[in-house]
Figure (tube, rainbow, N blue to C red):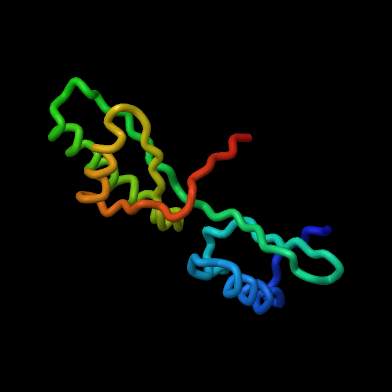
Length: 128
């Protein structure tokens, strides 16, 4: 197996694999967020494409001693600024991983007031 950089000549084969085996929309690999694009080749045949896409993760640290409406206002304000600054880097989505006792309530708030959605699939993290 060899791995080499993805080229425009690979698009038709990658698109065919995507159409046959993927349920998510075909990504536009020419978007600047795709900073790594490689194909795995065996005997001249593309076995797969691997890419790394820049995204962002929301991190909030809130004073839970304060009323919920103040915390919500802080989250709204911080998200507006964070989204604006992320867009300047070409990042077009933000992820949020919720933990703790308030996770489910906070998830409802983020969905209702800020437009967050449930992620399809299973979220995993690799730390290196």
